Structure formats: C-alpha cells, structure tokens
Image (cartoon, one colour):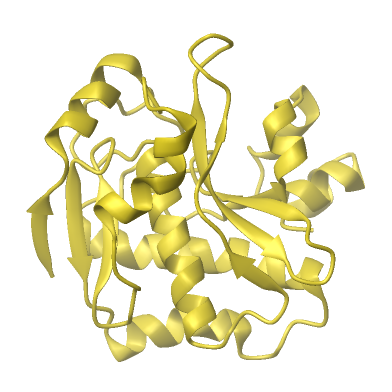
Length: 230
C-alpha cells in the first residue's frame, strides 16, 4: 500500500469550511475524477482520508480481504432491496479492512466529532470510498440490481452545510439511492436510502435509527428499511 498526498487546495478549503466547504455542486460530482481517475481493482484502489482526500491511500486487497467483502454476495440477492442491505453490510467489512491499511480504524461518524484527528474521514472521503467500493463490486459482477453513479450533493452554504455521498441507480426503476457511510463509525453498516429522502434531511426517528445495529429495535419499519438498506 502506498500513500500519496491529496489535493492541498481541496483539503484547505474543507478544513476551513467543514464538510463540503465552498465546493460547488458540479465539483462535488466530478471530485472522483480528480482523486481517483482510474477504475478500481482489487490490486489498486484509492481510499481517501483526512478531510477532502488530503491523504490518498492506494490499497491492494489481499485474496482474503476480497473474499471477506465478496462473501456478502455469495448467494445472489433476491431483489434490489436485499442487494442494498448487502451493500450496507459490505461497506462495514470494506472499512474494517481499509482501516488496518490506512490507520483509519478509529474514524468517527460525521465530521466534527474527530475533526483534526489523523485518520478521520469527512463526507468527501466517504463519498469517494463508497463510490470506489460500489464500482469494484460492479466490475466484479456482484451487483445485479444497481449501477454505481457519481457522488451527489445535499445542501449549500446558503441553506446549511453541504454534504456529499456516493450514489446508486436501481436499474429496473431508475430510482436514485445514496450509499453513505459518513453517518456511522468505521466498520459499521453504511446508510443506503433514496436520494430524495436523504436530500430532504433525516428526521429524528431516522437519526435515532442510526444509533442501533438491531433492526428489530427500530419502531418504524419504514425507518428500519431506510437504515438497513431496504
């Protein structure tokens, strides 16, 4: 695994202004081309950390690493909702593995809880990393119901903190989903929910759902479905 410095100007902007900073929506959608311009493979995959991809780690996944990630799809999912649940769980495994290589195992949910700590990820880092994972899974033929998209944006500096996340498109319906690991600590399941719901903001019940790993403990099945991938 080799590490290269990220875009200094991007990192500086994010450190000053928080997650997303003064980035435009257009840049949020093209940031992947700046920091990870080539298709991810098991042998070479960009993993971002330290706010705004200030650190770009180039990972080589071992056969056992990849087997642990791919195991989530060993039995083909029955439908798109089940595939989203598998993606949420695969994200946890991927982050656990990446954490060992990149010293990001202690990454905390959100941006500000661990702000300034080495190995902390913000939403730009998370958006790039989840996009890389989704693209790798797709390239390996493990996604049957979704196509990875570019990172998407919610909010602006005029109406609150901008936020970025990886995106997926359900092939049959064309519906857009976000694949967002920013809301949870390293090694915990990512959030996979409709982009429209994500852009509208997360209500109290849904936010409370983020604090549990037990689906049965969530009062509303609707919120449980959103929290746990469908």
